[in-house]
Length: 418
Image 1 (tube, rainbow, N blue to C red):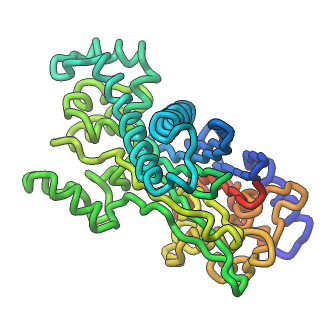
Image 2 (image 1 turned 135 degrees about the horizontal axis):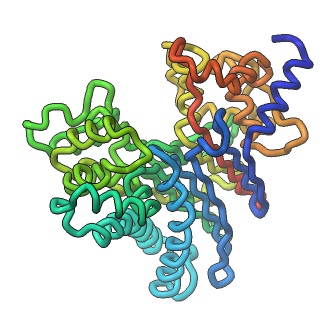
Image 3 (image 1 turned 60 degrees about the vertical axis):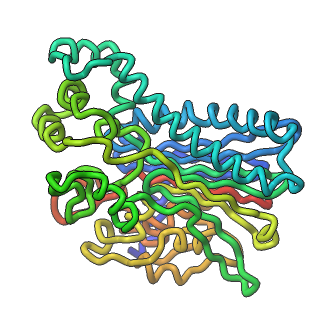
């Protein structure tokens, strides 16, 4: 499309559909988008600055909910406060009120362990809430199950649904960080080389069944009588693509909970829930244990370090096979594409060869939000026809040809602006 007026109109429609955030010290920009509107978006994002005895900490988190938004919403509303309290306990209880270069060698493992324990315990709290309501699921009858679901809908929905989680915890004064991830969302660190080229490194692996370790860990934990634990499409029981997640308790608790309680959730088709219940044979199948990594930012501080967090909606766009290039996957790592679209001299226009459309710096014009610029370039850049397609609900609803844009969320932390 070469009509500048149509391009401008398409750009404006998308800008109005995006939900964006921006904060400073350091600059943290975020954006989230779902073509069918905010009520259909199960992604959540969060940023907060913490002062712990005069030290500045930055906390970032992104969740990608599946099955609905109850788990992702509850996680983003509840977990950051738990982690802040736990960090304070570690800092004051073990390190005399400060973590700095003098105690970092010991502290980095303590904080990593704290993050792992708190995330797993948070997931266990979802289980405990269900057990407290229904300690004997094998004895539960339909009438009582429906009563429980009516009276405690939020508690049971956030247990039944699930979410990914990626987070970054940064000590801004002493320039080090921890990253953690559960599921298939991404947390990456981007830097600029001496030659002026920007690149990115994924800090925590994705927990999917494409990873041989995740596949074998899951399959080998189950008897051979469970013939198809992970199917040909890398889905657990033909349902879930992730090997780790928060929530998703039917995959973690005794099968009686799915058979006698969750199957009666009114938000879902009874036939589908009955089939789901039949597939659950011998839980647990998945875990909420995160991957955690420490990074010393001091060594890359002069390379303009940028933290990137994003959901797999970005992966789907970069892959392209269900978006603009049906059936043809790009094969390019999404974090490298996102890094190439960061502003400044390192902006890499040739990434258009991967995306299949031209890109431009400052896509959002006067919006001045880096995450918005990145998402706009992913969705079409200066190709107005593609920008229009991203909001073409009729096309998105059509069964064929496949054209799907998932919930997509991007957070960008420009660390050297602190």
